Amino acid sequence: MENEEPSMKCEYRPVSLPNEFPGGFFVCPLKEPRKILFANAEVLRLFDCRDFGELSIHLQDNVENMLAVEDVRRVPARWSTSWPRREA
Image (cartoon, rainbow, N blue to C red; front, side):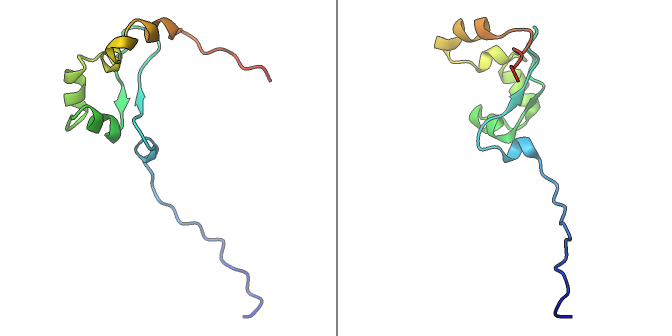
């Protein structure tokens, strides 16, 4: 038994990836209307909301309501309908 190879057993642990991120994470479409489709627990905490429904009401279902007042004009102007292609 001395030459027995160590077990290659992998342990499966379900992970909720967006909630593992160190910060807020949300999903919304690039095209209008920019309704929030998903927000992790940190976003809920930042906006002092108990659940996604409360966040949707608080932000009036519009991701632009997440922006700081000074960014309201600047940020949407940088959104586009497609991602730029990367050169290989």
